[in-house]
Amino acid sequence: MLPRELVSAVLPVSPVRPAEHLNDPRQQAFQRSLAPQLGKALHGEVLAKLTDGSFVVKVANIPARMQLPPGAQVGADVPLTLVSVHPRPTFQVGLGANPVFSEAGPPLPQGADPGKAPLAMREGAAVGRAAALLQAAAAGSAVQTLGAEANNTTLSQAGKTIGGVLAAAQKLETPLTAALGRAPVVAAAGADAASIAAGLQQALGKSGLFYESHVAEWAQGARALAELNAEPQQQLAKEGARQLPTDPATAQFINLQLATQEQAQVAWQGKLWPGQPMQLEVQRDTREGHDEAGEAGAHWHSRLRLRFPELGELEARVTLADGRVQVQFDAGSENTAALLRRHMGSLAGALDAAGTRLAGFEVRAPDGDTGMTDDD
Image 1 (cartoon, rainbow, N blue to C red):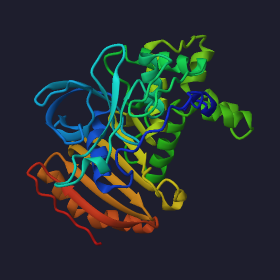
Image 2 (cartoon, rainbow, N blue to C red; image 1 turned 60 degrees about the horizontal axis):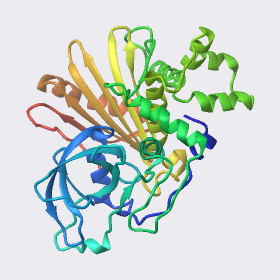
Image 3 (cartoon, helix red, strand yellow; image 1 turned 30 degrees about the horizontal axis):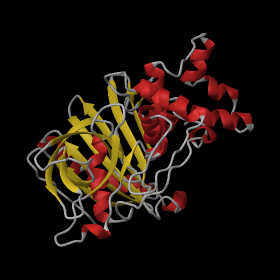
Image 4 (spheres, rainbow, N blue to C red; image 1 turned 45 degrees about the horizontal axis):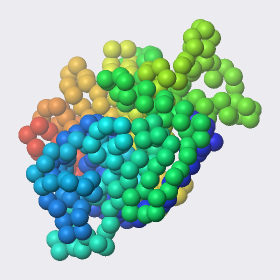
C-alpha cells in the first residue's frame, strides 16, 4: 500500500447525494454482480429513460440505473468503463480527454419514485481512492460537480504524480489483477493445514503488496530488516534496478496496491506446491457495521481455484463469519462432486477440531445438481 499521507493528498470535491443506501441488500447484490467487470471497457445498451431523467442501461447483461450525458437516446450503445465498485459502482461514460463519470444503482422496484433515490453524474470528479487518481490524470486539476455549485479543486503535486502513474498502468493490454508468487507455498504435496497456512502468510507478506506499510513498521522497530529484504522492491534495489513510477509494469503494481486498499481484497496466484497452480482471493466485508466489528466479528469471503490431475477444475468459495464457515464448491465433474459430498463429514470434523463450525456445505456439478446441505 502507498503511504496514507500520499494518498490523502488528493483534495476532496463537493459532496454529492448517495445513489443508494450502502447497506441496502439490493445495492449490495448489484455491487457483487458488477465486481468482476472492474476496470473493463464495456458496452451499455440504453433500455429506458425514467421520469427523473435517469436511464436503465444494460451492461454485461446486468441492468443498471444511471445518469447519462445530455442527448442520450433509448436504444443507443454507450461505451462504459467500470472504474469503482465501492462505495458505489461508478462508470466512466464515453471516451476522450474529458470523460464523464456516473454512479450507478440497481433498477428501481415497480412503482418506486426515482426522485427519492437520486443518482449522481460528475464530470471529472474523484470517485474512490484509486479511481480518483485515474480520473485526475484524464480530467486535469480543475473538476466540476454537476448538480451542485461549480467547484474548482486543485490536486497537489503528489496527487498529480500518482494520477500519472495510474495512467501509465493503462498502457499494458493485460492488467495485473493479482500478486504473483515467486516460489511454491509448500515444498511438496501432502503438507498439513498449518504448514499451508504459514506458507500462504509468507507468500502474501513477501509479495510486495504491503511493502510501504512494512517499511513504516521497520522504521518503528516493529519489523526486522531481513523481512523487508525478502520483498521484491528490496531485491530490485539490491540488484541496482531503478523502478520508475511511470514504467507500465511498476505502475500496474502500484494500481494493484491501491485496488487492494480500496476494495479490502487481496488476490494472489502462484504454485501451492511444485506443479500445482493456485489462485486465491480474500476479501473482508466492508459493508456498514461489518468493517467496524473487529477481527472476531469480521466477515471474510475467500475464493480458491485449483486444477488437480484427477479431480480436474475445482473452485471453492468460503465465507467465515462469527466463528462459522460456509463452503461452496464448483466441481468440474459429477464424480468429483460426489467425492466431495462423501467427505463432508471429515471436513466438518476437522473444522470442529479447530474450533470452527461448518454452517453450510454446497457442491455444484456441471449438470446443475447442487447437493446442498445447510444445518442452519
